[in-house]
Length: 585
Image (cartoon, rainbow, N blue to C red; front, side, top):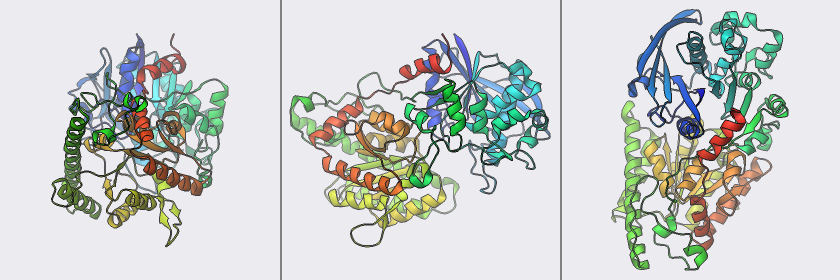
């Protein structure tokens, strides 16, 4: 077994250790690599609580100096829940108490300051533990995103860690747009404050590889990880090509974000790789044609009939009935779908209540959502109208950032009236085609964006905006939705579209990055592209119109079946990790 030590901020294998898609990768990759003869141990911060949730055992305690202070550190470990022989290590600071956040919003005037302090200290702890042989020495270290890049800086340039100088490092970039830039000096969150001796030791050539190309008085951890690591990995083949080009935000293109020259040098040296992230699938073929489940009868031509079938279980264990007769199938499917719709309503309601637990006042955003859900409950219960379920359910799950929703926020000019956002235009189109249709968006992040979406939710009764994240609701939206919107301005890989397709839901995506690599236009979903934000917005609306017209048609059913059969599995990606990124024989 080859031994690799992975440093990451998140881990989907542990409850409470997930924020975004990176956690899914960290949680699922070790099992696939183990099947390839690579034992991948993980080390991550405990954030004051994670180690306790898995009953981790303390294996060492030591002290170090960081930021001019002596810090007490505990090293704990627990067996990996899914991988024999693999271990998850935790770094716990002795003075920390209570649950900390994985990422901190922080002061806008000092971006990344708190998180940069936290992860720089973590990297020092890992380097110290390896140097003191408190951790077994791996054959290779795998670093993830800007949070872990300071380990590469310490191992290559700090004389105190000369024993680690020749330890190979590889570096995965999940999101190039977030680089963790901090000042070199004259700030409590700076390289000089963290490691004063290191800064004095750095030769000018080394310093030139880690400073920000736009701000020469700052260190750029992302750039340091790219330039110092032996090999660099982007999480999809298309994104690995996009980052070699300069960004042009005004034209709606997000590429190398100022680091394209560094990435091009890595590419020229043969040390840049685009390997697609993947998804975990059930052993049985995936179900799920929602239109058939909802009682829509399609033509019985073999091309359609042979591709549509309902398995005994969905990816989330929901049992579906099967009957020989078409009438029996239709009625049973409607009943089961109604039951699952009721469960989703209940899950959304519970999530909204849970989010209020730590607040004194109910937010207007949550109150709007609760009011909309109450009306849906009345319809579901037969107290208001005859329709139990939405005639078309559009869904979206993701962070509220300009990366994810910039195009939805763009203004378009309707034939009459003032300009409106793309999101509002989508809601108007949905209402015109399917009066009982519904769009549910689950996401949290930027407060300005949340305020915009709250205002839209107040004006449009066919839009439910859930301002937060809940895993159960997320799964329900993947499972019950019929069209998943993912109009990201850029997308390094994306896991949401894979999860939606896994559940048999068609996706409408911007043809960039991993979205382009996973959704085939007019075969397994819908893509749009465009030069500039205005054209992207226009083309998104045009493709949404195409989807509305095709919904429940034979073409739609065939596409839906094909989407549910796609397999972006970790086994195939793990082979590339081993051979290309790790270069293990």
